[in-house]
Length: 199
Image 1 (cartoon, rainbow, N blue to C red):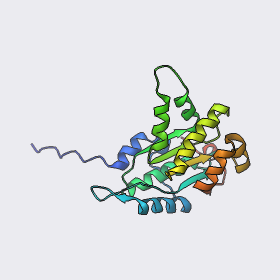
Image 2: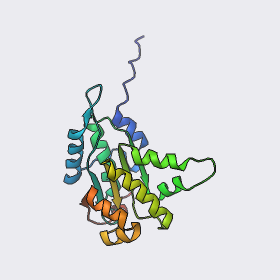
Image 3: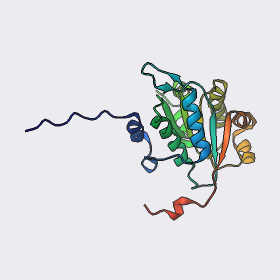
């Protein structure tokens, strides 16, 4: 009887895929601006103890387009592209609606700590920005999150369906101004892929 082969070590990419929504597992970023961003972030990373680069500071992307054009797919593909390049990466991902639900004040929950976790993580994917119903509270919350990442040059992947004018209306001038400075705008076009895809 032969011994079973030792378990293969789990790669960072495999661990990330376990956290990525099922529809985006295996996502590949193929938009030239997004692949260029991943390469830039990789080059800018500081080497860690094992020599692999880690995220320090870097640019952000605002991925814009109508519903179903692949914005979320490209954003998760960008995360996977960094991991495939060997970048040591601590990252968080949330939708705008889930962000507000997660940070709504409630008994026994340290929402300030939750906010700081998202604000300070080396890479944040914020999906569907502007999709949640706006209020003074959501505007202030979004401002605090974006402003921290803006001030500390933390790479952020943001997707939205809203054109610039509507984004400013939904999020307020302070957030829109920071996004304009901190992000490179990536525009996706085409039909709604969900309507043309059979699962």
